[in-house]
Length: 100
Image (tube, rainbow, N blue to C red; front, side, top):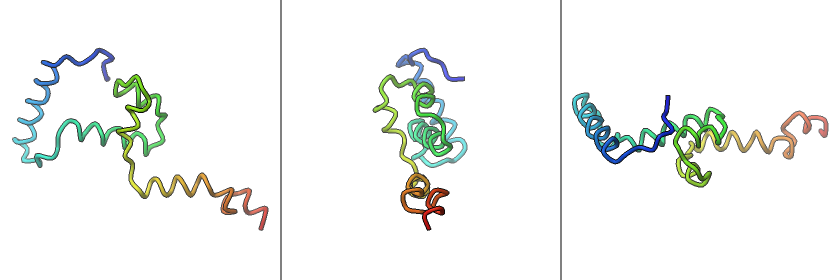
């Protein structure tokens, strides 16, 4: 469960220090940082079709534009979503089959 309480600086610093210690102990790459995990979490939720307002609440953002920064989704996902959205207009969807 994610808390709605704001994270205090000392709590965040303590978490980051523990995260680094665990990462090093497991031999994971230094590029793996809490912030990259946050991006991955939000990207997976977005690709899974989770409502953006839910994601916004999960990561504690008040502005939708702040959440948009974290929604770097794969180009394959974006292409699939775009094709699905445009299918009726391009004649590839159920409505398009009637027009052929």
